Image (tube, rainbow, N blue to C red; front, side, top):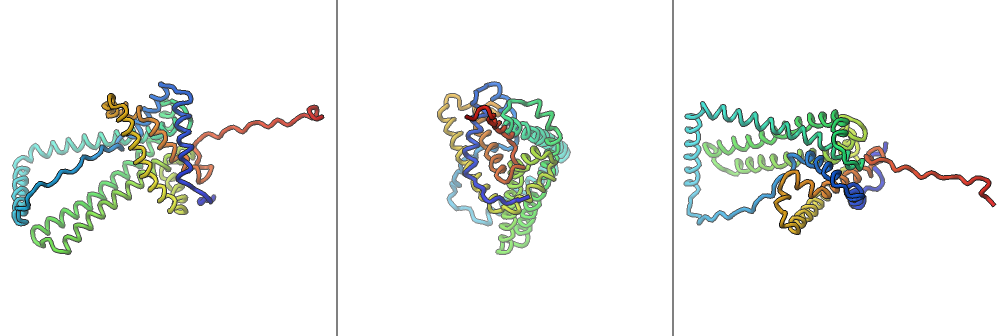
Amino acid sequence: MNSRPAYVSVIDPIGPAIERVRTVLFRPFDLGKWCVIGFSAWLAQLGTGGGNGGGGGGSGGDGAHRPEDITDEIRHGYEVAREYVAANLYWILPVAIFVLIVFISVWLLITWLSSRGRFTFLYCVAQNKGEFWNPWRLLLPHGNNLFGFRVALGIIWFLTGAAFLAAGGVLAFFAHQTLGFTVVTILGLVMCGLLFFATMIVFGIIAAFTTDFVVPIMYVRRLRCRPAWRVFLEVLSENKGRFFVYLLFQIVITIALGAIAVGMMCVCCAACCLFMLPYVGTVLLLPLSVFRRSYSLYYLAQYGPQFNVFPREPKPEVVEPSPGWQS
């Protein structure tokens, strides 16, 4: 199997993706179908939408604080916090455990729902159908397997990031207590920070590739997540540069879709608050979600017909003229 086709473009899938939006949502327009697909899109995006960060305020300080004064304040704050926790540990520990259990339970629920939703949404876009329960039941094994993979990935992601943060915290503690903030300790802190952000980028790319490519491979090849990843890695290993360009172009698409979403909110400023409602906002902006899902599917299809999730168009029958038609 050729894993490196002669031509792959990040531009060519734009046209078919736009046409897919028109076909799925507007030909003909069906409000019920729109809402069903919107619900699948909302489930698929659970836990992935992060709010826009607010602008940073100025420090406003006059520079009168000396470094040793700041150090003393940090040490005093640490001692006060430590004494408070030690004196109230009898209730802080149970509350912390309860909050942790609730947080993990909510995270698992959201991860499971979004894993199932990604397959129902893919089904709706690929098949041009406004169905939910049929793909929800049909693709149950795929969604559950993706859920297990994402949980394992999330745990590894958390432990790796926490390890670098803990290393930086320990180094900062000893630098403050004994070593001092020398060139070596400062470089160590910078290195821990860089490794932390590098880890976030790497795992973010893995998560993006899982959604954009591994999920469609699972769907079209009826594979579990790990075998689907092996199939994708074969393609990725032969096309590293192309997928790097794809990631860069995804930044452009994200900016463009964000600008369109903001423009729609400004035009409909009277109903702007509706866009902030979780399900309603997804339904109103459904063409953008269908475009993004369709774009990655058409991009993947360029690597071979074995990756095409869309139904094959029936070829028109060629009627051979009978001898009686000939003059």
